[in-house]
Image (cartoon, rainbow, N blue to C red):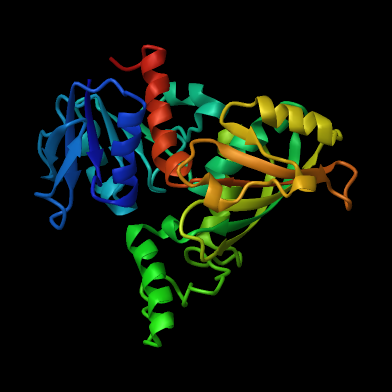
Length: 336
């Protein structure tokens, strides 16, 4: 099988290489693509060196079976036809196509079958915060329909890319050395700070990131659920966390919720507050599952539950989810 990675030099592109190797993904040939800035760089994959090719409008994708694309929405839109015109399945990590009616938005633990109906040849990877939340919501939705969600996210620097991670580390160094603080990748200094804004504000007063959680959750779960989100950038380096409140049609007990989460694919229950055991970004970074703890009844709502989750948004929130989509297509014989 011939695989392409578009945006190979970025944080998610590099994670693709690691995950494909870790999972022994069936690759006969690999092609890496990037911008003029990254073209010519060389990366090693399973003992062989691969040079990044310049992404162009040509026939480079003619024999490619699956293309993992993580180069930004503008690039995805510009090159979608070039990538898919010979039958390549494009699994896109950007927000460009997520809400298109003829593009499935897929989290394999929730709606893998949606990936089979892709008129454009494109499958969209959801927003990282949405992915991690719906993986946990799905087993609870199976117990009782979720009517309403309130969520506060605590999103690490890595959600803004490799350069943002480097800037956060640079800010801490500059503070220690008494130097002026570099602020390029965030609206404000992130070191020793939290920023209640991720992406641009919309006319609703919510940011684009928060509206993604509203719209994408409905599409993935095929649900009329309403989601009100507050997305916050925090000064952890990697892994996002979320505090989630849900209201269901029928009450779900804490014991039922814990059992459902513990047995759900993609979830790990880590919930023993008496012994100070709960998920934290330091421990979930580099892991595949979404970790869940602090499961309890919502004291303000008889039909409510609340819980805390943490997961690596570069892995499950991006590259891993895309690879799992591809694995599903191979498993059901939907791609040769």
